[in-house]
Amino acid sequence: QLQLVESGGGLVQPGGSLRLSCAASGETLDYYAVGWFRQAPGKEREGVSCISGNGVDRDYGDFVKGRFTISRDNAKNTLYLQMNSLKPEDTAVYYCASTPVGYDNAWSRESMYNHWGQGTQVTVSS
Image (cartoon, rainbow, N blue to C red; front, top):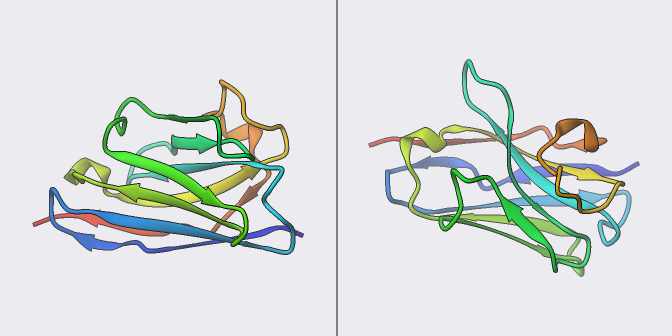
C-alpha cells in the first residue's frame, strides 16, 4: 500500500521560500504521476502542480506559474515543491497525491488521485 508523507511546511515571511517534500513508501513512485494540491481555510482544495512519472511533463496552476517548481527524485522515491516569492494568499495546507492514470491535462481534478498524504501547513505572514 502506497503511503505519502509531506514535510517542509512552516511559517515564512512574504517573499520568502520553502521547499516541500513528499516521501513515498510501500511502493515505488516511478510509474505514477504525482501532484501537489492545497486547501486554504474556507476554500476548496485546488491543484497546484503535477509531474509525470518520468519527470518530463509538468504543469502548474496559473496562480503559481513562475514562482513554484515541481520535481521528483525517483531514486529517493520523493516528490518536491520549491516555492519562491511566497505570498500571504499561498497560505494553506499542502497535500501530495498520486494517480495511477498517468500524467493528464486534467491533472487538477482530484478524482484522478487515489493516494493522498496527510498535508503540511504553509503559512505566509509577516
